[in-house]
Length: 282
Length: 269
Image (cartoon, rainbow over all chains, first blue to last red; front, side):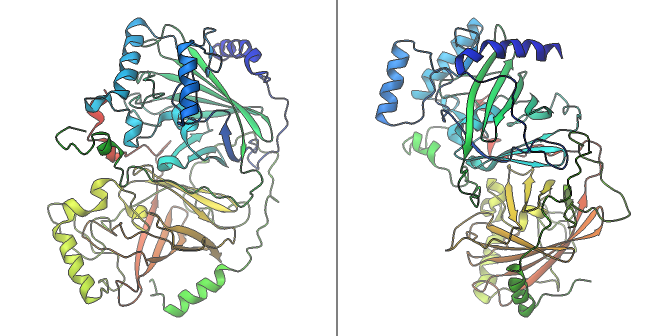
């Protein structure tokens, strides 16, 4: 548990950045199995996965201008990275080089591996999916929290019964999650990530050895703060943490339903990237 | 044995679908339970599992042990399919003449045309008997079904809501369920015409109407009877009948069969 304590310190440092309390004061309603009832739809304060350190909401001209400005002036004030204090992902030198190469080639691709796998409709992993999907719904059942995402009909099943992770050899696009509740905070331990998805359009990445600890800190009936601590000594110089506030969506539409979107079924975006040039491998 | 559902029975099921459910929501608050009781091990034998609202509780991990995914009809082994006695009640699917021809053509071209070989969403009922496990999560107002195959996900609403208006093209259709005693009856419409029932070219149009019946045989087995209607393709409704088996392995869980990524995973080491 000492790791959790260290994490709490790290999260504490980040308080100043968001003004959110680390430990929730909120007393939630309980479900029959004892879980806090947090079911429903939520949205991040800034949706979109273009960038971890310069998150942007849209792809319009103004979004692009604003993003370019922040990039040119090295403005990281909106970075999702709240630790380390410089708001950057602490890549090892070789990994920073790789991230920059991936970023550059994703915009000027000539090989299949340059294409951001997101364009191929892959499940985006635990970070990218929650920031990318249009609709994200939490459903709870005895012994489980289930996350459902409309984009790519992706989901996460989080067992709460304390079972061990699956064997290390098995790697999954959406990784392997084990959760438990600490008051109104859902803590999820994430391993077995295949790490083939990227963390942003800017080429951010981890390896398949990554260990992610997530905290869904429910701060009230309509909000939570998400903190994800990434630890991967094969890629980063030290652990780092992203944080974002989420608020309830569709709160005034009790009959709103999650309708899943298909993506790879009939997907042609990747072909279009080649402008119909069938000689290029994709 | 299964009885074939007549059109009159189907009509009765529709009427029943609009009946208020009268759920005793949230009245069984077991507040003394420890925080997060965890997933109890599956029962073996004895009384049927029941949810707090008294309905049969289908929560758990299930899988069909059948060769229905390869061919719904009786068939002997072939290079790309294990043999099977078939799951169609009466043995044969009642195609209209033109459709029987099309089915034959589909069969000949199945390696390239079967949507499963492109890893598309499998449609209903094929998702149920695809040779991969799936998990049912049961709530008072709905069931969530997650399938290992391609992250297929589905909601069956049991809150007395109706299908959305208008035809919507969905790979998995729109599912609205209700209880008839201990049987869960699910009405599914709004399909596209892209999915197949199996790897033998059995197909449907966007007029497909599926009525699923889930009922416990015992705590670890579900009888899954499905009536399939499509006036554009078949001469009459027909029924399939199969058994779903509960996974009893310790700590069993869904993994991922993300088949559409296999061809390009090499680009992302």
